[in-house]
Amino acid sequence: MKSKSAEAANTTNQSSLAIRGGAPAVKSDPGDNFTWPIITREDENAALDVIRRGAMSDIDVTLKFEEEFARWQGCTYALGYNNGTGAVQAAMFSIKIGAGDEVICPSLNFWASVIQCYSLGATPVFAEVDPYTLCLDPKDIEHRITGDTKAIVVNHNYGHPADMDAIIAIAERRHLKVLEDVSHAHGALYKGRKVGSFGDVAAASMMSKKSLATGEAGMLWTEDREIYDRAIAWGHYNLFSPDIETADLKKFFGIPLGGVKGRTHQVSSAMGRVQLKHYDKRTEEIQKAINYFWDLLDGVPGIKPHRTSKDSGNTMGGWYWPRGHYRSEELEGLSLSAFANAVNAEGAICDPGCNLPLHLHPVFSEADIYGHGKPTRNAHTSRVIDQPPGSLPVSEGIGEKVFGVPRFNYFKKDFIEEYAAAYRKVANNYRELLAGDKGNPGYLTRWDIPKPTTWSA
Image (cartoon, rainbow, N blue to C red):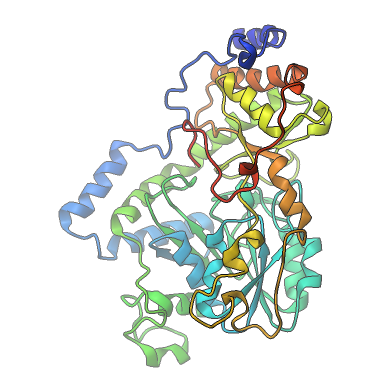
């Protein structure tokens, strides 16, 4: 039997679009549906305990958080960082990325997954993404490998697991290290196994809007003791003791090799322990809610979910920054911008586009950051690496083919049905928008994409 909201949704499909003066499909107040992270008295008390003890820069709570995270992730070693950027940088150092090395990574990515290699004298080589998963495309890796290639950085983009079987096979065959950036996909499964457990080392951000949110922190984890020791030596001087197991690091005891202090602030560690305790239960509800939203839209022209298939053994974890695929050819070429504006007018959230591919940003083509007299990207390379516009067509064109949807943090059935009704209504009445369609503006492929004020990524 259909709910009242579902019945109303079918009626709404036949009414005029709100952008043309009709009644909006979404009538309910979102309330706390989009509030994240979920902060309770338990989080507050944990943070206050650290503050009242004056233990903000100590390590006792952080050591407990690392232990609990490692147990949850199913790994041997975990090391807390002040942010995900620092964790990725330490991970790069830990697998011996250095001067002259090349690192293959997807261009459709966030800068904090790769730009840190500049500080180590290495350079990124950008590759394409799979147009459905939006993750690194294994078919575009091998031809980019040279004698200078040291590692592959893999992102589980927007929560979708990358094709780790294919990527690991290439890495093993070509003797390359693999660094997994799990910042979008805490707890996501690839064939029944948590992402971050396939490569040599993994790292993740835990900033306030990430699925596993601690306020501001990061984590590095690995099964390899030498990698763990090197990460400690890079920026964790308060753990850098004579007991470190890697022999060639012992003589440097006392001073961090990276000249940085990377340890997590203990207020974040305290919050992280509480958030981790409730994480699986909360993300189970998130997955139920967003899957229900997409199930309601099954068969609606022009829009497809960005999610794992139900029989794959894969999941989207906490579903950070969820996306949808837009198929303009199914709506007579209607631009994504026009579609999104109409959905937003219905009271729902549709965030068109995605971040600019990194290879198009001048930091990766022109910037001389350290005064080498040439672009930093080629300061240490044995060849000139240049990836101009047109070199990665999938990544460059994806901005007009994807859009953001809200992450429903609670399974509130009627509210989700209203949101689905808004998308269905616009898709079913798209012809009302064709005459006034001005196409997609430049912001769909800009770095600083405007976000609706009701939705923060």
